[in-house]
Length: 185
Image (cartoon, rainbow, N blue to C red; front, side):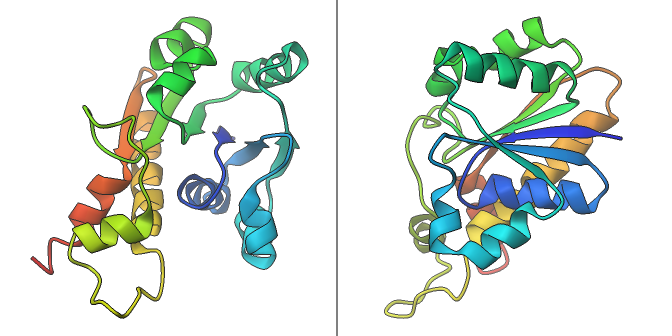
């Protein structure tokens, strides 16, 4: 059974993690000590996104929290993250560090923007507007960019797992919004 560790809150990566769960993967969702804010805002959808997964809360800045994550990663096939590259490197979770410490682990990093802007924050609504997918004053009915990114995360993860050697892929919210706006343009 494929083992996936999801290290993200909110929507795109948890959505992708749920897709992996439905595909038969053993998924562990790692949340910060305070949990995922999404659970407070949308408790029913949060429960749906995490159905069939183990959810653990870890403080990755403490030795105990980091040791627990290391144990999960030692046995995992795929790590999903949603942090800026500099944050991952500070936590020892940049691709070079991960590949050295866990040579059989593949990694899909979700970011807001493609390089060189991958440190910039982003938001679904903003990127839908930039891609021309909104018609003010109407707001979109759903988070198309977030869900598109989630599907791209799944595709990237599956492509990595099909390779003979572990690898690293980057999926951006901006790229997902731009791609889903192509028919409109």
